[in-house]
Length: 267
Image (cartoon, rainbow, N blue to C red; front, side):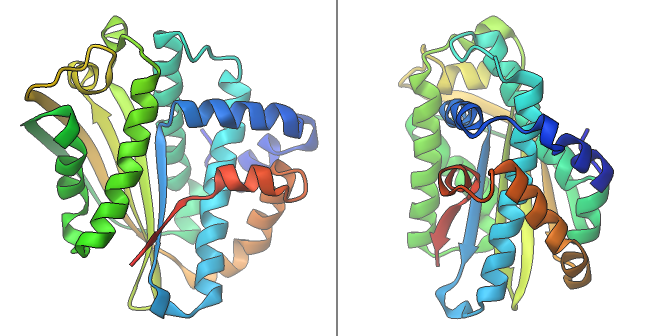
């Protein structure tokens, strides 16, 4: 598990950094089987480049360290093999959870609340993402246009996973999925994170190659976490995070940075 500065420094030692070409190849494979959705919600009225930069830095750092960890553990996973893809998705989601809950990030993003909840609904595959949006994002009280942007992001992710054409029932394993949302409230950066544990049958029915058109049960448990940015923790670790990102991206290559960035939602 990637928990401390020492762990991360060891992981990001120059001898452990893949070539840009190999890393991009792996990042493309990650995009084909997305187990994480990274969202940045920044109001245009915020007018604070520093807050914007901090959100970008945190997003890239968490994403980059997770990707590097998974590269060493599973760079050769076969995306056409359902057992390997399921293992990758579970490990990817867990890596985000472990990192955000770890020693370093607890200094930068102290945890405010952590709830463990259950959700189920009987719905069609087409309507499922709307049910999930309501379950996960209702407390944000977003306007309809923001919800539409989030809907587009989830639809894109769902389409990517469906396009794999895998028979997820073969694994008999539940599926891990992670969503992290950076946003600004009263001029302060917050992180809301959702770590989903989706029942295999629900995933198979709604995402698999045998997905049905009718209404079927969807069930999952999930962690709902809220973190507040510590200005002091951020100041003390900003240069460390920049240095790690610089190593992972081979000096800030934009084509690699683009993979690590989150989806920006305008409010």
